[in-house]
Every structure is written in C-alpha cells, then in structure tokens.
Image (cartoon, rainbow, N blue to C red; front, side, top):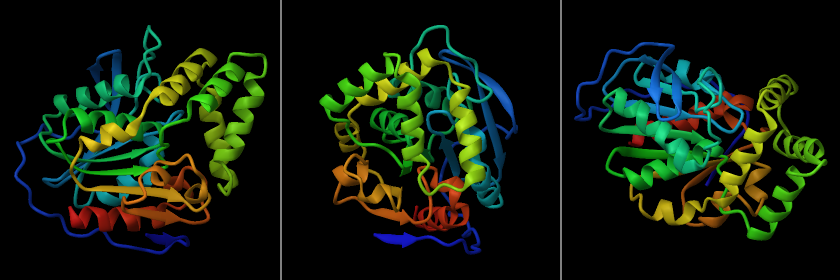
Length: 280
C-alpha cells in the first residue's frame, strides 16, 4: 500500500506494445447506439494500448478530463457517459443495475472493435466494470477501481432504501453527499452537487438500489487479471469499501481528497495511473 497526497508533476511512461486487432479511427465526442439509447463517448489519443474510463453515479466523461488529457500522448483513451448521464440518452425504463451498465461498456468496446483494453473505473462505474470483467475477463487486460464500494449489508440497504422512498429523501441525499465530499476542494464539491441534483429522484433511487443489491466479490473472483484499488485517505478507514473486503488486494491511498480522488488530486491520481499502465 502506498499513500500519495500533494500534487507533483509526472510524465506518462512510454507505451508497451501489445497485439490487438486494428481499431476504428478515433472520433472525439461522438455518439453510438447502446442497449438503452444513444451513448456519448470521448475517444482520442494514440497508441496500440487502449484505456477505457467509466465514471460514477452522477458523473460524466468530464470527470476524467485530467486523466484523458494526461495519457493521450501515448495511449488511446476512451471515456463514456453511462445511460442517463452526461450527454447520453435517458432510458425509457429504469434499468441501472451494474449488469445493465456493463452492457453500455460492452456496446462501446464492441463498436470500437477493442479486443483488449485496460479498464479504469470510479465508484458506481467500478461495479459496472467488475460486472463486465467477470463476463469478459479475456478482454480486460488490467482493472483499476477507484472509490468502489464493497457489498452493502442487507440491513443498511433496507434502511437507506426506505429513507430514500420517504419524505426524508432530500436529507438522506444531502447527508450522503456531505460524506462523499469530505476533504473535497470547494470548487469541485460545487460542481459535483450540481451533477447530482440534475438526476431525477426515481433514477437516483433505481441506481442506488442497483448498487446495494450488487455483490462485487464473487464477480471479481472470475477476473484473474491485474487489479488495483485506489481510495481516498478517509475512505481507507471505512468498513464498506471494496478494499476493506479484499484485504489482500493491491491498493493505493490518496490523501487530501474526497470520494472523487481523480478530481481532487489529479496529479497524484495520474502518478498512480502512470505506474499501473507501465506495469501492464
């Protein structure tokens, strides 16, 4: 385990050669048809190694902007907006389980003809990434999960779900955001709160229920490739994180950051990302 905190300049390591099928030409900011509507993707950079970034609940491709700009000198980097997020279409049905979101990942990588790629995911996106990697382990060359929750105890899931479906909904969400944004920079927190407020209540409840019902541990057992967990300093001490439930997994800690470590401490996050990419 390694702890990072203060920003410092790093350089992206040289790419490693890997045999992959020739992919389509990159097209920044375009849309493709997904299983639940059109999906927005940001595709750019150069290199034979492709990295796919997937965001958290309430997020978008913009949550990875500092990472996309950082790695694209040496790698092809793709970020997608999950259904109902960012510039992607809102689905007609409330299908937001991690398995549903894994279908969005599948639609993107299939359309771009990526046989092998490195998957980098945050929070809710981590559950979707785990679901995808368990279904297609041969395609995921390496997996980095940041701020990804473990299995939620049934009693907590029941209590929180009941509160979300009650008149206390807004207070529950306010408390939730306060917890996630502990140690976040004020300007980052302001943007994230607006992102969350843009998601309708019924979609929020559907997403959270899907996360509560998902158990990532047996899914991870099906993926035998390289795995790295990244957590904030505060989250590293909490019992509900994936890191706490996988004590033998390799993990890194980023101090002075809230739940969105890649936004609060982008250079520290990129340093970890560089090392991970260089090794795989």
